[in-house]
Length: 184
Image (cartoon, rainbow, N blue to C red):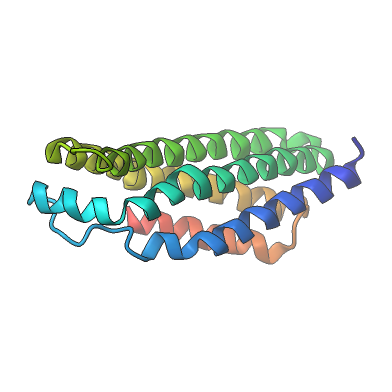
């Protein structure tokens, strides 16, 4: 495949992932967070049951599509970095590796959250629902934020060092990495 085709495919999947994210954005805010306190397991489970359709749509459809697009984008980005500056292959590998970890963390967290929502479709055990939901927090907390910061910082460095994307995207990546670190 020619570099031009890789560039086009990389851009197309990057844009497609962002479009899916924008379309799915309401799923992250409309009824997806249980209204009850986590400590009250019965009310929490009932609250999660009311939001289960939105949660399942997000965790089993939207997020996997976004992550698939991100994976293709990262593979193409790695290729473009290597073509632009072969001596920076190490950073292209770091970007792809960190991206794979971020994708795995996202999908594992989604699996736990989706499992909690799925458990509410039958006679749910409130403590299991709470446990699954709480288990997903680990992936979205410091672990996920630190790995996202690594991905963003390495992508920002690669962008500025190679020029494969506009320079402003590298600076935005650095700023987003800093925001992730501050949020930990």
